[in-house]
Image (cartoon, rainbow, N blue to C red; front, side):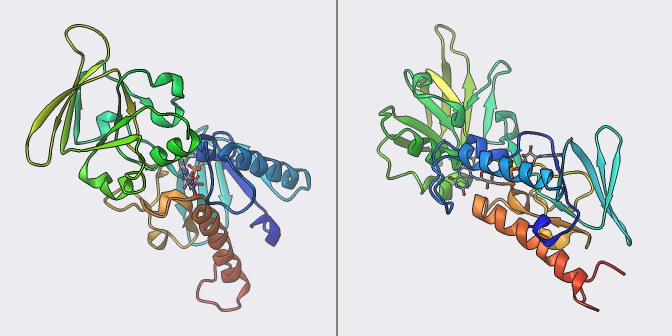
Length: 285
Ligand SMILES: Cc1cc2nc3c(=O)[nH]c(=O)nc-3n(C[C@H](O)[C@H](O)[C@H](O)COP(=O)(O)OP(=O)(O)OC[C@H]3O[C@@H](n4cnc5c(N)ncnc54)[C@H](O)[C@@H]3O)c2cc1C
């Protein structure tokens, strides 16, 4: 959008273009003929290459470490010490994975680690599989593997109940509503012992062959942004030269279409602010 408005545009990206799209095995809510996230990521990457070749955009492989807004400019500090200056910065760093140690409702022995559900193949699901949390990748995983018959035992804390509603009709999901889970290594044999406490305080012990992480994520806020108690960065709380787009805005509304739309809107707000003479949003003095 920025390049189409002839704004001098630079994209700073630390990973592969497309971010979370690379994790989406089945896609059905984005216009166009995309059936997986990587297909769309490849198209985005080709778009950026085309824009770069046409001299309309520069892509910078780097980690952004701090943003700051000033009266006459915005600055982006990179972790190698360089500082980029712009009239305006859109921050769309998304979210990063939560680990079991980040979840208050889980206690686990030191040697415990859980591979991510989104990466699991049907071959990984031998025996009894427990899933920590009912975050949205669960629905994506089920859609991407329509022929897998394995039951997924999903430990679902109260905060995930609204997400679980998306998958509760799937007969391959057994939702286990819980308030706490304790995960330890069994004295004999492999796998994990999972002791869960239900909402009424009842404790039940399960033997799990594998435990997968589907806890969701936390905002990947860059230093210098204003964030709320939940760590997300509301767009309307930032310096006027800094805008937020995509998943970083709030825990809900995390979708591809809203990420694209909010990014486009952020740029248009800047564009109109700079072109409307005397407009209250004007950034160029
Ligand atoms: C498994 C899974 C399935 C999903 N399925 C769907 C679906 O079917 N439909 C749907 O609409 N949505 C789906 N989503 C959600 C969707 O992927 C996200 O809402 C969307 O990709 C968010 O885009 P974003 O640009 O805000 O963040 P991201 O895609 O996370 O992109 C953020 C980018 O910022 C980069 N970055 C982060 N920090 C820095 C830094 N400090 N410096 C430089 N670069 C940085 C990252 O490398 C990344 O490329 C799914 C998500 C997951 C995880």
